[in-house]
Length: 208
Image: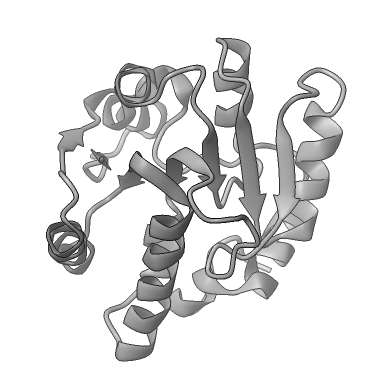
């Protein structure tokens, strides 16, 4: 199996991510930058004592990095059983307060108004791989679940490449729900990509 799917819609399937993490093994996979490149934005919009939900955590190191600087109320979910097993094995002893659960972000089992922050690094982009009606239906369900589990005054923080259809959807959705919206460009994440790969990186944004 190639790490990249043959069709973009596969990014939204459990089977693809199960195969992906089994093939990749325990080596972390990072979408759009790591903690050092994103930390200045994250610390501005999430506080250590807040309850944080990371949707589509994969086997990213970012939750562990946040935990190590004082963010102890972190719950991580992913549809991949393999990714969650890897993360429990990696963090279980050294970061005992951190929670990992196999769960579909479109059908979460948490009660309503459970979290101050929902953090999404690449999950919206993976789910929103095209602008077809069935995809939009899936994304609406995803956003409604995020809205449900967020407390009043909570924040949905998205790290994204902001393709045109995604940007339009976020602007329309945030306005429709009466949410304030902020868009920040993550130059540090882009610079790291350029230094490591020697290619012009795609622009990376954080939407809050």
